[in-house]
Length: 121
Image (tube, rainbow, N blue to C red; front, side, top):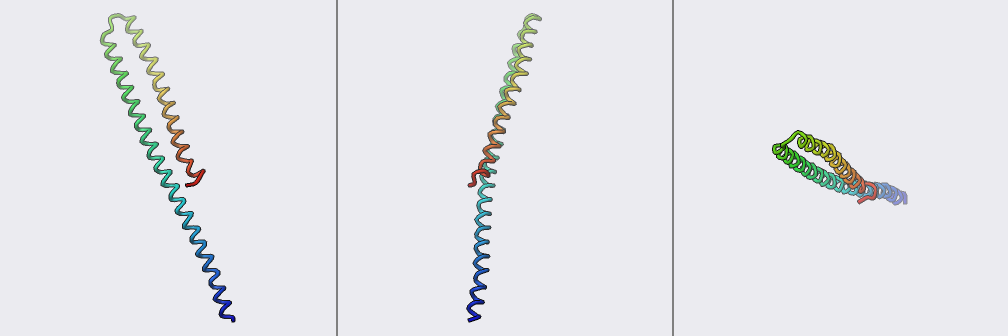
């Protein structure tokens, strides 16, 4: 009889250890899935950000080339001042708008990156 009780008692810790191991394994798998999802979202966000920056560079380069071309056809000082004033205004407004767009994109990516951690896999 004492042998049976000892066998039962030794199985109980084994079951608890097995359950704990299974819980840890499940939690580890879940955390791995969350990290993978977060990483994929971050990579996509960086790609989108880089694409947007390249788009802005192209826009700004075209704008500058257009300004230089118009500048080469200026015939009077007043035309030069008018052209320069318009270009200066656009040079101020354009980066401001582009910065807003980039900030909105970063916020969107950040929120999307954090979402899996809030809701789980």
